[in-house]
Structures are given as C-alpha cells and as structure tokens.
Image (cartoon, rainbow, N blue to C red; front, top):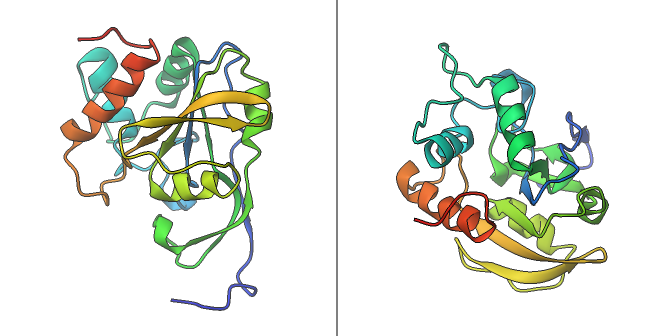
Length: 200
C-alpha cells in the first residue's frame, strides 16, 4: 500500500447530489467506483453492487426490478423510483485519492468531506441520514459528534442545524460478506421506521 499520497491526483465526485425537495431520507455511500465499472450515470452503478436489487426486493418483491437485460441498471427507473419515494443520494466524500484503481473503500483516502448539512437544507422534510458501509460511516463521523451505532441501528445526531436519525446500514457491495436477504432485512427495518414501507 502506498504511504505517500501527495503525488496521487485528487478525484472529484463525478455526480451532483440527488436531493428530492420532499425527500425524507438521505442515503450516503463512500465514493463511486471508477467509471469503467459503471452501468448507468447514477449512484451505485456497479453491476456487482446490490443496492438496487435490495430496493427492488423490498419495495416490489422483485430483486431484478431495476436490472436491464444486460445486467446493468435502468437509470430512468431508478431515478424515478428515488424521486417518487423521497430518497436522496450522495456520498460522504466529495474528493478522494484512489490508491488502487478499483472500487475498494479500503484504498480510498478522503481529501474533502461532503457538506451534508447543506444537502439537508435542500430537503426540509428529511429526518434520517443513512450511511451504507463502514467507510461512509467513518467519513461522516469525522465531521459529526457521536458514537457509531451498530449495524442496522441508529442514533440521533445534529448535522448543520438539523437533528436527524443516523442509520448505519451494511454495505451493499458484494465484497461485504453477508447474503443479500440479510442485508435487505436491515434496510427493511430502516425503511419501516421512516415510513417508506409498511411494517410487516
């Protein structure tokens, strides 16, 4: 692993925050994978990431709801779904140095954290921030006071001038060794708590 990072160029986030004005949840990952791994021009674009399969499973009972015939994701369907359900999306880092040219969080060095308070200001109804993995959690907690909640649970924090529930969810990357059904159950509890899906 490279110890000196100053010679590695800073990579800026390639996407703008997706912030529905009536959004109720802001989901934050760590940083997008390299472009060659994208199957759409939106968040969680890697075919090997199960975020949109989990969403399909929880909201429609069909893990392939957002999957195209080539195995990538249907950007129009995903955007429409997030807008309709009030799910905002971005990442906890807006600038990074990538030590390996891959999607691994382990080799990301955060150069600048995202301004989550500014994002929340554009989502007045948002009461929950959801981090989707350890790197995202660590990055956010470097800017917010509070202890890390256990996976699948939340704690109340203040971000900017807003008190919100901060949920820690399991990573949807397949590099995180947990079956998709078990990951989905953690996400189900969070969505039920926030009123996006009815309780079972």
